[in-house]
Image 1 (spheres, rainbow, N blue to C red):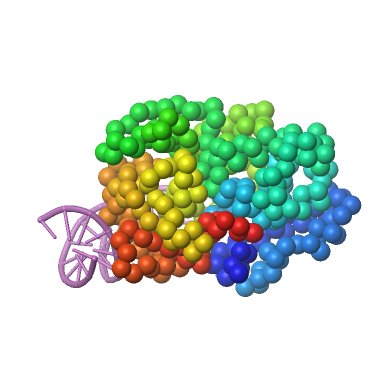
Image 2: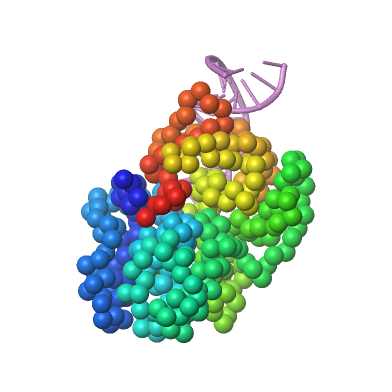
Length: 316
DNA sequence: CCGTAGTTTCCTGATT
DNA sequence: TAATCAGGAAACTACG
């Protein structure tokens, strides 16, 4: 029911949606009118959008490609055009009138058939998004600098470099859980000749290559806590034993290692004094905003509310 | 400089 | 008794 629920406080993608549509027109895609007619349900409810910065954050680069809507697929395509300064007709949007799930199931061959030479770029970028970044996660493949840090919980080996960090699951695999904005920029730098340095507030002040066509979101500290939690849940193989789903379809989950999660969150925020006590206070603030719902009587158990996005299995 | 969002920190008291 | 939950209050910080 709320796959494209427009009631959440900030479907602030309106400007972007307009941009995409304009872009489609400019690109003289022969089926642009088709695109317009097939605008998915995101065209509904605009007028009711309460443009709050609270949810500026939930856009294509903040959720796993698997969960993208058709619109988010187009956003991604548009983004690639913009960031690679590609000619608009390089990517036939009409060939990508599909949701993220479908997109993720496409082979390289299918991408090439759909988008010609650009297909390879799309494919490799998507593979990267699928396996290395996602949701609030992102990475710098060229910056996998592992800096060992002490962890109270011995099962938790976390390494950091700037905004990103690597989480060693303790099972021999080192994976990334990074900031989404960083990931976005990493993707850009990855596919453009001029390499951009990792995300940092310092860098942000000096860099001016970020495409302006993508509206700046009010997400001052990178991934929000609830997104961070969601991403851990969406990566059970990467973050084993930290948080688990109690009821996947209902969005109910439970902290298994509350302090370990708090440490991980603290690491992300560069705050070594983070505790579950403090993290849980922030979680409780989400009740009022309906990002979380109360689960009475169960310790360490939370439930995603109607304003939490991107956690459902088939959210499109 | 100001206001706001999203925490962070601290605290008191209740519950498990 | 320790851990967790519930919220109030104030502080903090990036951002517009």
